[in-house]
Length: 161
Image (cartoon, rainbow, N blue to C red; front, side):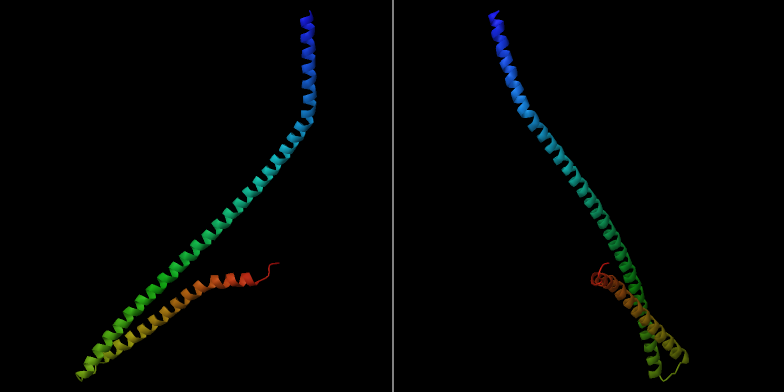
């Protein structure tokens, strides 16, 4: 029985030590848990804010990409129109040269042909129209390229309300 009493005493002493240790750990553990929960909430908030920023940046990037694609398509269309007008001008100039050569040859031969004069005048008119159309297409291309730059410069100079 003395062994049981000794074991019971040792067990009671161990239980007292465990209770003392538990009482000192419990408040600290509760504080640690509360601090960890607060830190976790802070991290969740920071993560949500970062996720929102990434979403906004992604939307801005998508918008900028769409604008850049639209601008590139507009520039390609203006370039194509300019190319068509330049080809038309080259063709009209070639017709004018041919008509003038024929008119010059007829004058050298001493034969004045009203048909050749009319043909040369029509070729010259077409060349002038083609040159004017090419100038308009070129000016349109330049204006189209400068407009976004001017808009950006104007928006940077304008104070935001």
